[in-house]
Amino acid sequence: MGMLVIFNIILILIIAAALVAIKKWVHSERARRAILLVAPLITIAFHYSSFFYHLLFTGAGIAYLGETPNLILPIYPCNVVMWCALAYGLLSNKDSNIALLLSDYVFWFGIASTLVGMFANVDFIMNPTLANFEVTKSIVAHATLLFNLLLIPVFGLLRPDFFRNMRNMILSVLAMYIIGLYCNVVFEALVGAEKAYDENSMFIIHSPFEGAPFLRYPLIAAIGLVIYFAIFTVCDLVRSPHGNRWFDRVLAALRKD
Image 1 (tube, rainbow, N blue to C red):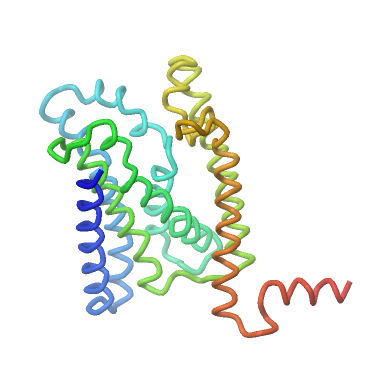
Image 2 (cartoon, rainbow, N blue to C red; image 1 turned 120 degrees about the vertical axis):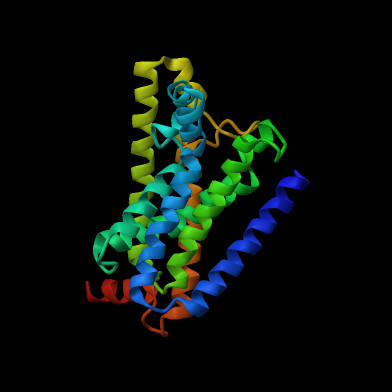
């Protein structure tokens, strides 16, 4: 695992250098919009790179697609974050309600899923080598996604607001649960219950952690919401003046009633 940690630290240093350069030299709104669109396309290109290779050069593209179901369905959180990042990049109005929902989801939900995908990468755990393209590609794809979501605060598009943030995170965990249920039902209907169990979309069917069978998506999501509640409270304490913090507003509303 030491090799994985070192590789990820190198990737994070590259990401940090790229973000510093962008912050320093990219000032036009047009350039920022272009970067927000190109960045998720790069992640998608990495995600599908092996499929394109087999499709174009080995003739085994369809077989590879069948063996790699997260290329067809968004089985894991990072898959959904990737497509939502693209949707966010395509939006012209970054101040709309849907843009704020997507930016909250991509950044706050994406941070956790990309870091897990980098430092606890399942492909590397199963085949601990960086000499295998499939393994390296998986790690780098998560790193490019991390770069993508960090562009949001770098461009000043992260707008902390306790009530909106919590509402959007609750909507996000519910949406992920629905997506996970859908993917598991599709796998069971088309391939069988065993395949659905193996893919375990959103970790709904069983826990991804050995020795902790209770730690499935509902509990993971609940723990995540508690952590987000704490993070957003800290952000509110830092950003909002005394008397206008979320608990002040709640107390004021209760007094009025």
